Amino acid sequence: MSQSEQYLVDDLHPIDIVEHLAEHNAWDFDRVGDDQIAMAVEGQWRTYSLTLAWSAHDETLRLICTFEMEPPAEREAALVAALNAVNDRCWAGCFTWWAEQKLMIWRYGLVLAGGQVAIPEQIDTMIAAAVLSAERYYPAFQLVVWGDRTPEEALQVAIAEAYGRA
Image (cartoon, rainbow, N blue to C red; front, side):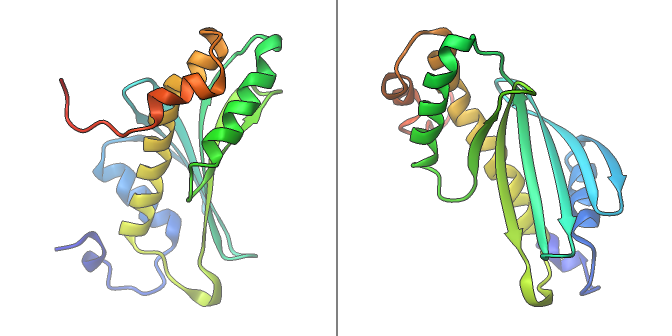
C-alpha cells in the first residue's frame, strides 16, 4: 500500500501530512501552528533543521532546510560563487546564504494551484531532496570555506553521486 492510499479525505491539510511523515520517521518536530511545522532530520554530516509552511494565499507548500555555517568574512565571496555553481546543477530547489543568521538554506516551493492536493509521496520527496542536496553539497561548501579551495575544485567532491558504502 502506498503512503497516499491511507488518506481517503481529499482535503487533508499538507502540514498534517508532514506531521504524519515526521512521526513515521521518528523525527523530532514541533507543530508551530496550523500552517507550519519545524523538524530536525539527522544526516551523515549534521542534523538539518527543516521548516514547512503552507500558504493558502498562493497555494504553496514552502520548505526550507537550514544548517549553520560561519565562514570567515574573506571567504564569503567564494561561498557565494560556490552557491551559484551548485544552483546551476539543481533543478528542484536552490541554496541561498543568509549571512546575518549565518545559515545555509535550501529552499523549495510546491505549488498546488487550483485546489490541488499534496500527497505524502510528493512531500516525502521534497524532504528527501532537501536533505540529499544538503548532504551532497555540504562537503563542497566546507572545502570552499575552510579548505581554501576554489568552487570548481570543491565541487569535484559532489559531481558524482556515490552508491553504497565502502
